[in-house]
Image 1: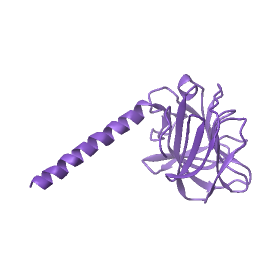
Image 2: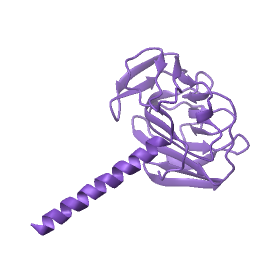
Image 3: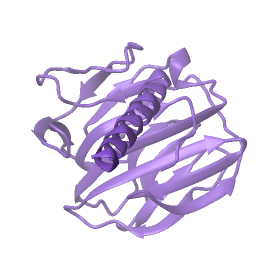
Image 4: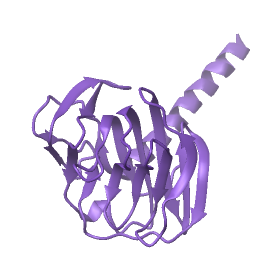
Length: 211
C-alpha cells in the first residue's frame, strides 16, 4: 500500500513538472499557427501575439497530425507581417510538422523570413536545409525527404549555435550569428519556391528548446 502511494506521489510530481515545463514554453511563444480554425482567408496566431497570416493561392484544410492541417497547392503560401515578437530575439526555436505531396525540381521553401532565418528542401527532391542568416550558405541535414511522409522538423538558435532536428534527432549544427530584419514571414513561399504539401502545428518560441 505504501509502495502504491509512493508511485502515485511520484506520478503527481512528474505531472506538475511537465505541466510547469509546458507552461514555461507557452510563455515564450512568439507565434503558433495550428490551422484548426474554420477555413477562411486568414490563419489565426494562437499565441495571442496577433501574428495572423494571410492566405494567398489555393489551400485546403485536411486531417493533420493534431486536428486539422493546411495543405498548399503549388504556389500558395501564408504571409505573416513582421512584428516585434518575430524578430530581435536572443534565441529562438522554430518547429513544425510537414508532409510533402510532391517534391519540386526547384527548391521548396517551407518557413522563411527573407534575408534572415529559413527552412527549405534543396532542389531535385533532396534533403531538409536551414540557415540562420542571409550571409550563410544553406546548411544541409542529410535527411532525404520522401513524399507522403509526415516529418517533425525543428531549428534552434542560441549563443551563435544553430541546431537542426528531424523527428527529434539532431541532424546538423553550426556556429553562426542570429540575424533578423523586418521582412514578412512566409509559411511556404508562393510562386518563387513553391510547396505542394501540408503543414501542421507551426510554432516559434523566443527561447532555444531541445528538438
